[in-house]
Image (cartoon, rainbow over all chains, first blue to last red; front, side, top):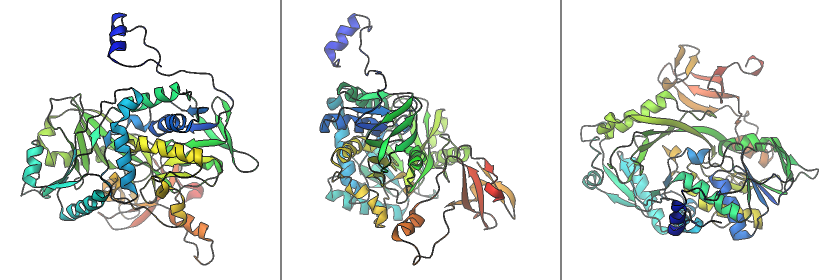
Length: 416
Length: 84
């Protein structure tokens, strides 16, 4: 693999950038593999990479309906954090954040990781109590959360001029999560793809999986794709919103429903806010990208949706809430808007698990799954190769539903 | 924004309603079903790529609970199967 460094950059600059190698191959589709991963998004590519890198399984195909990195990894708001609520969740996200911070070196691909801190703007006392309780749990697991006063909050975020004493919801204080950061989503997809490809994994784009195939013994046998049957004894489903659409073809029911989450981006402006701002009581969050755009996320739509777009009133509600705290943003022009459809489990925690179908694995229910990509890929690769859940993901198997032992997570966006 | 047909008020804006979740299976007698069937009743809802039946509460209107069929691909409110 061509190494990316200052010397290769200089060498290629001298030759007009015409000699860069392709970052990954496009090999012919084979009839069988040891492992098939469905979905070349963050979790699928990370799983394939760690299968090859950590567990030596290289006869792997990643099948993608569209193009690599074109699903929810291109539709999120790139927030990486570990301020979760439950004992089960926090160590997993702490690990994932640490892996993200080392990813540029690991993959020889510039992730543009920017560890810029997340600040919660708190406007109600119940929310403040909930976050302080979260802080106590997070302290145990080595994540960071710290309460700050309203004055300190306004010092750190000068653009926060709304929410004064006469507002309907006055700002009462804030919480600071210094581990949080943002990075470049395309680099995550491309970096993992390039790393996996280098280790022998095959990535097949424009290869839609239409159904899962089961053998006479009920075990998974392979997948039916738009380019023919691909056989594998182990199949991992990493397709976000369409998980149930696929698993139903194998007769498997999962406690998931698919919902749409809204995001939009403003025109680029000069540096104004250097932290990720989360306003849980008002129902929006944003950060300023390196390009200067405000990347804004809102609340989920009511009801299930596979539409991947934005509802006008959800958009308006989000903007109204934002302007109440950041009135100067009224002058911003908005450039792009989109929705992502994600599946959410019955208890709002992810599912990474074997299933009742032998050889079929799912990674789903990723509500805010971008931050979980490295640890999610590593732990799923562990499960696929050893058959046993990694200790970080053991609480997130389907067994928890069997025993009604839910991991009710308040750290996700849905908690709003 | 959906325009949801309330049986009393007629078509009203979605923002007057609170979403009540998809309509799942009828509650079985817990003593008559296996643990697995009971868990399925508790946790699994239909998640179709197409029409789904769902409950809405006209909370900022007349207070009526109603069900509609809505296509998850288009948000169109559609006829349910068998005229449901």
